[in-house]
Length: 350
Image (cartoon, rainbow, N blue to C red; front, side):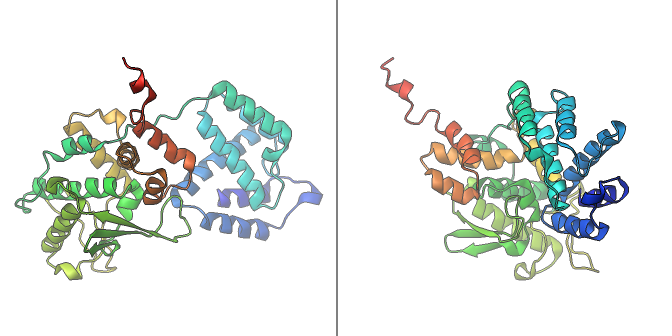
């Protein structure tokens, strides 16, 4: 988005009294770019181009855009685009104007009224993926080796996937957070593991967070044991002592058992991508007889909140462990977990 904003702002005609130096726009765009994750910036860039292209076709100015231009744009795609997508594009228009130090037309009362009408007329509930409960996790893990001959490619992949699934579930990790984990981010502790999350979707300043993972009562379901086993196997396969192991914790493995090893030049290691994490979860769900369409990597995170709340965990503890900043989002999972906890219908005497 930011680069497009600067470029469009230079070439599009603007009123003399509102004309801004290209250098200022570029500088503002640079700050805006640094504030957001790469995936977010890519989505914003697409949204901004869509709005600019529509303005070009309709001979309207995109920056600064008149309120009636924005209202017309939103109306043109209401019911065509998902309301969530259109809402994001409305946000991008606002951010573009703020980055250029212009008053956002989206804040004008008339535009807000149009948007309220669109949301009321075309509201659709978000298609959330199904949460994985602990019983579901047991089904996913049942065919995976807890430990066996790690020279077998299938066993090696199974050991990695067991550690990934259990750690993602117990730490309520996003797929991007799982993919970003380095060996050094998971530290042994007498009580289990301490997982360092260096940055995340809701922590783009990189403040970081630490999550404690205790030992599980069932050895086959223990994230601590699974991660320690995988870490030892990974070190052996790379031919290094475990205390010298560095780089990505979760790495790609091909069907021949070859895994991402440190690159000689940079010392960096190949790591699973967030998309690969999603595919692993869906593949394991399918193998366990669960519908691939209903589950994704987020099912681990939502499953943590749902199961923990159903088992009596306090809302504040669920939110703190999962690093949820939005009470509304967290309560969505918690309510599902509590549907049959202290359920008033169970007191009807039926």
